[in-house]
Length: 276
Image (tube, rainbow, N blue to C red; front, side):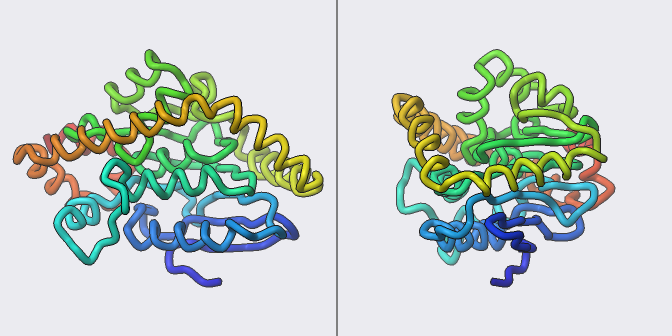
């Protein structure tokens, strides 16, 4: 299976998926299509027990969702839309991955912002280096994270910390992200890959029935929150649509969209502040 933005490597029952969209690993509509396709192939795959997400880029896990694709898709009938009005395509993608039978692990060594962090929040476990940087910058650009990130962040780390992350729109280090519960642990670069690989191999050796049983228990514990999650998704959509209807917001986003290069992405909060 060959993709344009994903590099796949199999190790027994473990599938390694590295994001690869140079120069800064923007999440594009093409990447979303490929992640949907990969999820579809895994839905009934009994041979794959664990999926480990990493990056082929030494600086960026995923920079964020490509603003050109976001703005261009609003009125483009050629771009696939969600079949449900209250769930957009990125929310549908993250929910699809969240409900797969495989255990998913995110391994971040670098920058993970915007749609990349929204996708990461839908994985089962997350690890990073202390120096990695995490950010949901959307509010500083005049919109809200609407790929499930606002909802999942509030549900996973609580409303007070979620407000800080969202409203500050700043970069959080891997150490801060671990302290807040955004990731499981922050590990030194020399230990990160080994820890994730050992964990993935250990999980892959567990009986499939036991992995499924653990997943079923956790799913049932959180079933009561499903309605709240989808209510959050609907609110994200409403907020995004309303804000994108403000000319000053779309003008600012169009300006930022022209700055999605390596130099400006390294300090995106500063780039957005200067653009606005």
